[in-house]
Image (cartoon, rainbow, N blue to C red; front, side, top):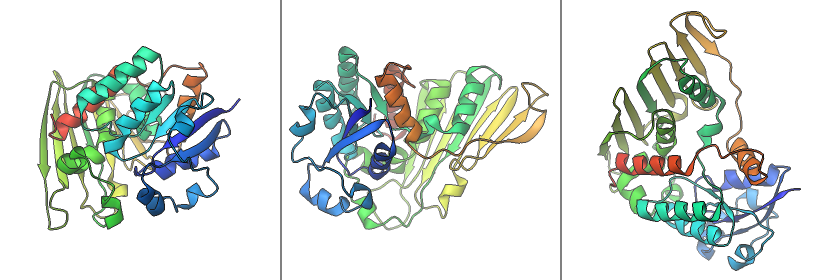
Length: 330
C-alpha cells in the first residue's frame, strides 16, 4: 500500500526536488501541496514539477485528513518549524528540510513533541544516503580508518545566484549566519555524525564584495574534540563550485576523501593491505544516486516498521545546535 504524503510550502531551495521524488516514487501518493502565500504560489508554483498537482485551499484539508501519514515541510526556514509542529500535533510524520530554524528551544520543543507522539521527524540532509558518505561512515564507525584526528569539508556555491534565489532567505539565521547556516549545515551534519557534538566551535563569518552586504558570504568554522579537529568552509563567491565541494577524513590507519561530492568520487589511502583494499591511494567506485530518493525510501521504511530511523532525535538536536554555534547564533 502506498504511503500518503502532503507537502507544506514550496519556498525552500529543495522544495521542487522533494516534490519530484515524491511524485516519482512508486510507494508514495502525493495527495497535494499547500502554499500559504498566494504571492509565493504565483512566483514559484509555475515550476513544471507542480503541473497536474492538487493545490490545497487550506492547511486543514490535509492536516485533518487521517489518511495522510507524512508531511514534507518545504517552506521558508523561518516557517518550517511551525509547519512541523502543526503536522506532529495532527499525528503526521515529518520530513523537515534543513536547517531546522534558528531557535534551538523551538526546535527542541518540536523534537519533544515527535518523541511524545512516537512519530518520525527526519531532517532533509541529502548526504546521509550518498554512497561515498555511507562508505566513510561505515569505515569510521567500524574503526577501519583508526583513530580519527582530522576532518575537513568545503561546500560552496557560485556568486551568480539570481535575485529570486536570495528572496527566499528571510530568517535571522540566514541573514546573520549566512552561507554557513544555509548551505554548510549539510557537512556539519556529517561531522557530527562521525565525531559527535564538538567541545567548542569557533566561527569565522565575513562578508566580501558589495552585493547583499547583510549576508555572510565567506565563512569557516573550527570544531574542537578531545582528540580531533574539524574545519569546514563555505562561500558563495566561488566559480564552478560544484566540482570543488569535498569532504576529507584522516585517521591513524588511513584517509578517505570525497571530491566532488556529487556525483561522488571517492579516494582511499591505507597504511597496509586489508579489508579487500591495497596499501596506499586508490579510487573506490561508488554509485551516483539521485538526490533525496533514498532519503524518501528511508522514511517509507520507518513508517512501515521495516527499519529504524537513519538518525536519532538526539543526533538531530546535536546537529542543529552545532549549526547554530558555527553560524554565530548561539
